[in-house]
Image (tube, rainbow, N blue to C red; front, side, top):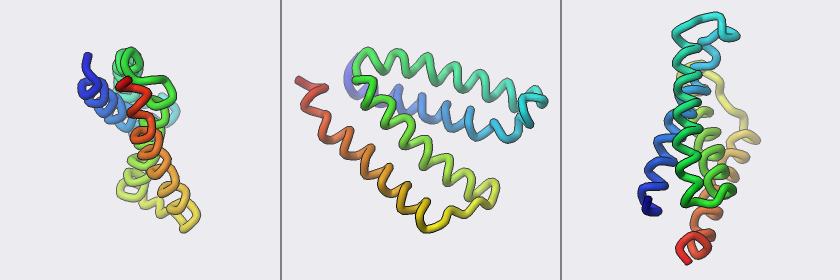
Length: 114
């Protein structure tokens, strides 16, 4: 697997994580079957793909990217789907998360490639 393929798999894994976590509220404590099944299948696929990504990317980079992008994306889902508007401090924190993910990925290229 190439580095590009690893990042593609990581992005698919992130989409699955967003799907899994985004459907959790609809499970109503895993009492509703369809959202529960979506959540379990999506998180299982997510973990499977991440296990392959970690063959190429270091654990820290993989997890920082996965969690950071997931947090920001799920915040947007909360805004759109549930009308959960973040306050200024939350927005500032999300900006710091984005900056952190970018730094971790850009500054770690040397360690991955060589």
